[in-house]
Length: 125
Figure 1 (tube, rainbow, N blue to C red):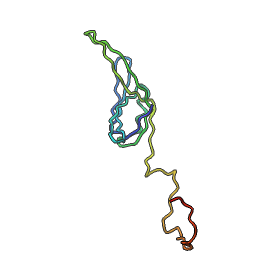
Figure 2 (tube, rainbow, N blue to C red; figure 1 turned 90 degrees about the horizontal axis):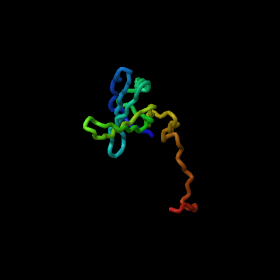
Figure 3 (cartoon, rainbow, N blue to C red; figure 1 turned 45 degrees about the vertical axis):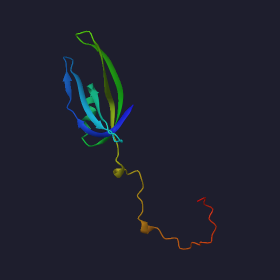
Figure 4 (cartoon, one colour; figure 1 turned 60 degrees about the horizontal axis):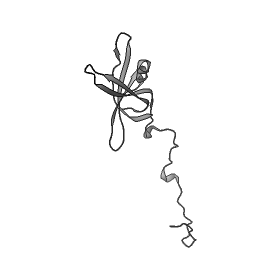
């Protein structure tokens, strides 16, 4: 699965426990009719993937949904979901997209001067 949007926030890398579990969070705001602020966590060696990104940048993040079960001290079972990122890539903005050839200015086209209004037009409209 993937989520696309603009980076709203990139957190610092956090380390937990004796084994040094590392986690880093990023929030991406989707660009749709009702924008969503999606928090994605990168863990362990994947936390370094966020080093080359900054707030405001357009990105596409490959994600996995994770779920876990936890029983609290009162014996109640709770369920938690997380969105875990495993790849992130910058999206090119349309203004900076150099894959399209430049459009020549309008004055580079010569006007058609030999139009004959009496010619049959086979267009259906």
